[in-house]
Every structure is written in C-alpha cells, then in structure tokens.
Length: 265
Image 1 (tube, rainbow, N blue to C red):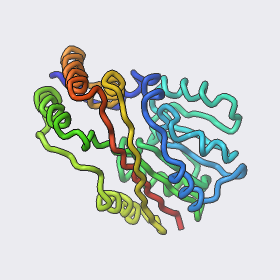
Image 2: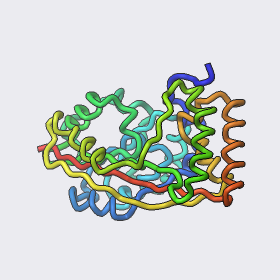
Image 3: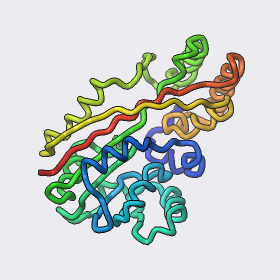
C-alpha cells in the first residue's frame, strides 16, 4: 500500500522544513483577534498545535503567559529554542486531547491550521471548559489554491495528481475550488452547538510565488504528500517540478485564510 495510514506523525519528520517554508498569518488577522479579546501581561493563553511557531510571536509579544501544546517532539524542541528568550512561554509535548487543563482558567485558546487534527466534539468542548467566562476561542487556517493565473500549468499538474496522488491515495479525482465564504461561515457556526456565543468569521487573502524547486520543497511539508511512499513521491515531485519549469519556472498560490472567533458566555 503506497500510502501510509495515520498522518499525525508526518509533520514532525520535516519540522525544520515546515518552519522554514510554511507561511505565517496576516497582521489584519491578529488585529481582529486582539480587538475581539484584549490580551496583555495578565492574560493566560493556550496555542493548540504550535507546529513551527508560525502563529506564535504576535501573541507572545502581548506579554501574556502562553502555553503551547504540540504532539511532535521535533516541533516542541524547535519552538523551545526559537522562543527561548520569552520567559512567558512553555511547550507541552502531547496531543491536545490528552492534556489535563484546568477549567475556566484561560483568556484565549487559539489554533492555527491545526485544530482539524482534534476530533470536533472533544476539541470544542475542551476549549469551552478551559476558557474563563468572556474568554475567546480563535481558530484560523490557510487554504492555498494553485495557480489560477496559469491554467495550462494547472491542467498539467492535475494530470500528474490523477496519475500519482489520487491513484495511490484511494481518493476520487475532484477539482477543489477556492475556499469560499459559505465554507467559512459554516465552519464558524459549528461553535454554536458547543455553547459558544458572539460567533464571527472573516476571510483574509494573499498570494505567494515560488520557483519550481521551492514549490517542491513546500509540497514536501504536506502530510498527505509525505505519506506517499518515497519512490513514488520522488517521481511525482520530479514531474511537477519539470512541468513548472516547462511553463515559466514559477507557480503562484492564492491563499485564503479563514478566521473563526467564538466566546464563552
């Protein structure tokens, strides 16, 4: 079976590359979070799934006491080193659902492109219990959409995904569109059934352009791509790189970042 089941382990095998290649988040996103919930040096905050720390520094700079939870040992070590000058920072190496947090203790719990790894019912319920009354949950995620400005290249890459990714991943071939306002609104509304109120959502946009070899490095940080057996993945990536070089040598990703905000009454 070319796909190795169970993807939780994958990111931690490429922690350094993930930290280097995965993007951070926009200033406007943090502005909206901090307007929704005031965070300062008296605040207690938890980050669920810190990864390479892409969403950590703007929160640390508020002076809050920040506890990060990270399943990957390599990521935990990386972030302890990366943020070692901040005495208000600590990392727990475990799955979020396994950590015994006190109830009604935290002003903000947030998660950047990681909360989908936590079972929905466990995750939202646990966050709700952890928050003080009036405390906030912020969940946000990046949804990259491949080069819509170069349809010939996109078609070529789609063919390669049909030949390599979908065939060996056991998935049906389907073109995924850009992440939509409707999807963001539905995701945000999920918090209602777990008791949250004052639910809001927002969308943020940007573009990123990569040389062929840079894009291949980025693909190597995605869990479902890492899980493809190495010989198949090597050939797959080589053909994508060849296609990009054949059609201009660059590829642009159109990012949509959705933000969900919810409050414990």
